[in-house]
Length: 121
Image: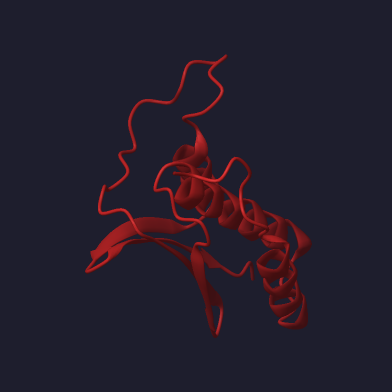
């Protein structure tokens, strides 16, 4: 059963911001990365039922890759955007709009949903 409130993601957000700031990323790109991370993190909790999603952040020269691991083997579907007044259903569309690439990879104990963002030059 899912906890009634999502787990705290503030440490991951602060560390992501610190890494990108130290690497001279533009503030708009940092904000996009934070929002995309938040969407994947909440999806892992809300839809996959993972109490504490694992986050992996890799910065290789000018490309950021953020992965969020959850316990569910069910792969998300990027269907039609949600109704304008729907309370959910836009998360992956938002991640797609904010990032350069995103995807999902099944793993032995669930899946890894990820995005990549290229640094603005």
